[in-house]
Length: 283
Ligand code: PDD
Image 1 (cartoon, helix red, strand yellow):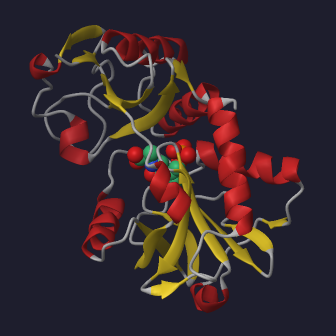
Image 2 (image 1 turned 135 degrees about the vertical axis):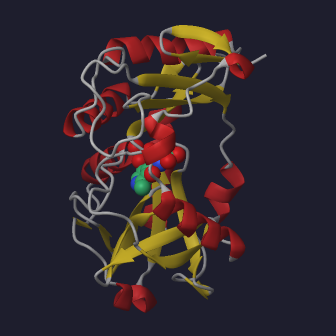
């Protein structure tokens, strides 16, 4: 039986209920996080907690009940209680603006937020990380606050469905002729031997894994230019990888049916994949 967390209580998943007027359901009015636990320990908790706090503050959603220390304890207890502390797990955390009769503007002050969390067994696909995956390009149809991790995910939903239908793993968004990020990942490219990625802005999510990758690039002394790559440069891209909490470093070896470089994961990508694995697993 799976135990989940809802508004201060640990309950069987089948008994966890939220009102139909919850604003997460009606408006996508909420913030979420996905965290990774390895042997019961959260990877890079401080970054996830800070991003969630920033999202709640920016959207003026009450942070009571969603304090960093509370949520950290919830993640650890859910993983332990569901028998997942011996291996790898993810925890999904969501805070919505709560339930109230439907109005576009905020509900009355004091309306309790809905705080939900659930833990799931996680099995990384190491073969896919080693061999590389396919990608597609997709117009970035999202709004202009992609830096907030809101539960309103229709852009990524449409993009990932298009990827699935094309037999691909990830869709690379492009806006104004520039690659921004993946549907649920940040994207790095190699052109002329130099690593490039879209700079932090309102058009991409400030990924926690992205922070790790940028640190590793500096630590390893790899050539790096935090500058967008144009869709028009697609044919001269030498390497591409996407990264995220459940993705690690995932090479893309084919985009829109054409091989990237020699069609195999590139040298810089493999170096960063191995360096991130060391940070995750400490080996
Ligand atoms: N996705 N960009 C987007 C649009 C994302 O949705 C994600 C994460 C990332 C990578 O961020 P991080 O390294 O912090 O996981 C980048 C999560 C995992 C998801 O939606 O399931």
